[in-house]
Image (cartoon, rainbow, N blue to C red):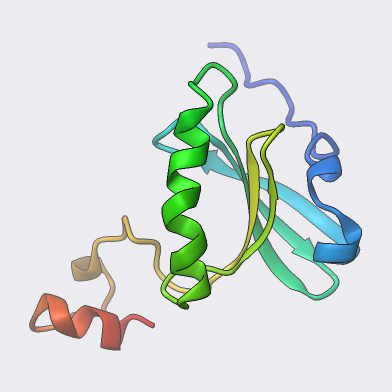
Length: 125
């Protein structure tokens, strides 16, 4: 089995404008999202961010449509703050929110064993 090609950590830098995210300290690939998007954990002078770059082979509406939901959700405080959007690159930069990912199984997290789904939010902030 061939080794994976090395990740060019400098490639996402143009998508991280310094006036918005500060001085970038590190960019690490997180994983390939379920959508096939490239996802990167970004550390910068003011804090942590998540850079998501959508695949180029998808219809442009598949980038625009989720933004119609994400923007108001972020403004309402129920989604991570949207720091930067680059429609041409199909990229978004969001504030990183510490905690368990939504895909985590709360049953495997001893500190997060709620009696009901409603308690999940309270226990896993």
